[in-house]
Length: 336
Image 1 (cartoon, rainbow, N blue to C red):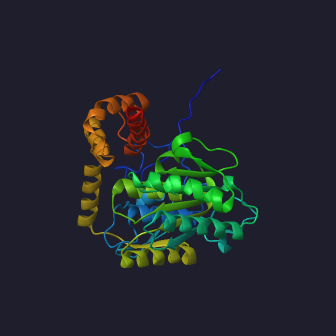
Image 2 (cartoon, one colour):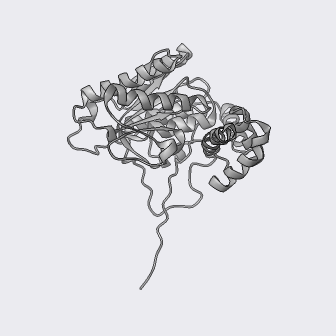
Image 3 (cartoon, rainbow, N blue to C red):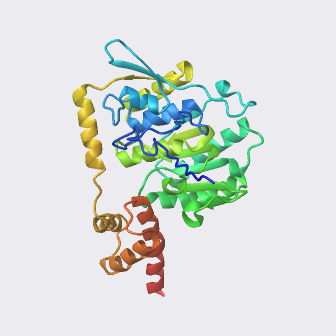
């Protein structure tokens, strides 16, 4: 009997890949995303690529937009774009047009308690609007990097059961979804997962490429609604543009954006190329060690543990997880 192999790939796995359009022609090209509401996908792409901002972080050529499932409508001179996607009804009983696929929550919160109150408020709002909601339906994702997110995670893991009566699964520790629990994670343990509702928590929206790619990825983990919570100081002009961009998506069903000039496009691609030049494994480890203030005596041992646990990876979040978990254990052991 004849044998064949099917190879599938995600052309938008990273919105900052140097080449979006495949170098070979696929037999089938699925231009629809069947998990995420098109409005949420358009917003996530826009936020990730900086399309609402004057200075874009990413831009695609017309054929690349089409490859990614967009319908391209532009002015005669090509300076103004309207990008839309075909509507998708995943559930026939879901009135998608009447329910926002994205909500933005903004409130200054500089303490663990303040951040917890915002997250609890988002969950209560979702619960009121969806009476049959269960803990399994919610994923809480902390988008930022650095040691502070572990304090936020630990605090939320105590406050959610205390105030809502729902158990919490800290995926940084378990590395998996668990039935009957609220999924709580940093941005490193959510690829391939989906939830009806996602609460994405970030202190502010930076222009870092890795951060924006993670923001795009986390916002698209939901198939009903994503709730973006911005907890700290953020440029008001930028937030106004983001809200306006979301309003256009919700009301007109498209992204409206000014196209960058040819020079700006070249600058964008140069910046992406430079960003994609990876640092050495040693330098990455040293950077993470500095972030966690790891004492020199522990660094060589930790580097060996990292290599054994995840290989000589260049994923900063993987390395950060291993360092946090093992460095605390090393310190406790030496104190005994």
